[in-house]
Length: 262
Image: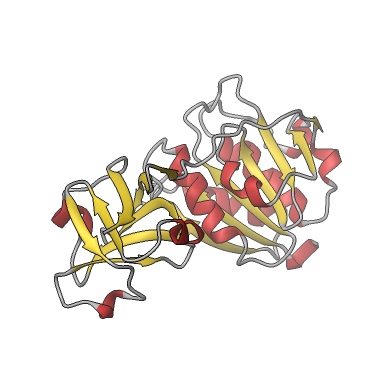
């Protein structure tokens, strides 16, 4: 792969501190021609589930062979394994704590190694910064063409924490809000392909608030009106046009979402 490597980074580090920049420095030191892409560094702290969701949303839009470094790692320094995973789409590098679960639902692992080969880490490994000392140099090694098998010993089953998925009971889809984005839009656990099970006309209930019908986009409703639509990643989403649905509807992650005929 060498200088043509594409390496993405997803973390809960934020950008106020230099931690992300330090990881980039380590990667570029080991693979100077790499193209580095920031997916996000604003995953809520220690929120592995949201990190898994955002990583899966991005995964399919990168070239085959892309190396994805994901660090949302509340167990850093503990017995949780550090791993690298090969799939049909590329590589995943990070902690084995469920962070890769959503990607692996559609891209099963072809090979997994536990990152046990110290020569591919920095000389001193801090128990609190594996992003810098383990995951960044391993990503650089993959980027310059080191085989996955050289990076560690074979690893068994990865930790899986599947994302919640709405269930169809009592003639309705019953789910929840999975994520609130920067605009206050609500991403729900209802998939677009599940909607035909409900039939027409549809009512989407978010807590006590009801929205009639599924729209195509925000501009299908008036300013300040709530709208339900199939989002760009295939999940049913709820927004308020030119507003903040989480604030207006009093919703947050975990708020009940019901889709029924009405």
